[in-house]
Length: 139
Ligand code: THU
Image (cartoon, rainbow, N blue to C red; front, side, top):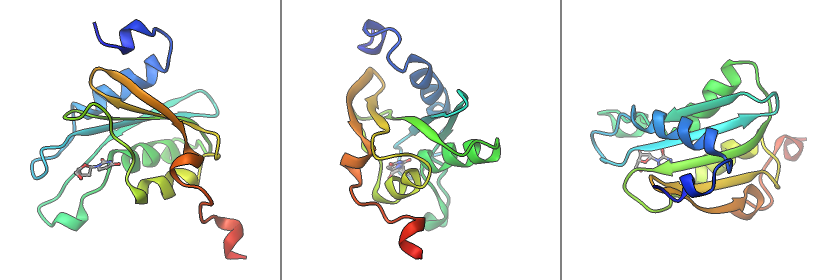
C-alpha cells in the first residue's frame, strides 16, 4: 500500500493521472520519468509527461505537457497541481515550469510534490515562486 492509498481522497485522481502519464514519459537520455497533473477550474484533469529529444534543448517537462493539454482543452485556470518523479521520493517543479504554472494559477494554489509512493509534501505555488513575473508587469 502506498502512502497515497492511506490518504484516500487527497488528490487521488490527480495522482493516478500523473502516474499514468509518467508511465508514458519519453526520457531515454535522463532516465528520469516525470508526470504532472493539473485540475482545471471547470473540474477537468489534465496530465502530461516529460518528452526528451536527441537535440537536448528541444525536450520539455511534464508540467509543460500538462499545461498544453489544459490550454488545448479550453481551460484557463489551474486550481491544483501535482508533480511526480519515478526515481525520487519527491520532486519539485523546475524554475521554468514554476513560471509557466504561475501564468494560470494563483499564489495559493496547492502543489503536491510526489514520488511513486504518494504525496510527500504539499506547498503553495507562491512558496515556490514568490513575486512571479506576470502580465501586469508588462504594462
Ligand atoms: N523534468 C520535468 O519534467 N519536470 C521538472 O519540473 C523537472 C525536470 C524533466 C526534464 C527532463 O526530461 C528530466 O526531468 C531531467 O531533468
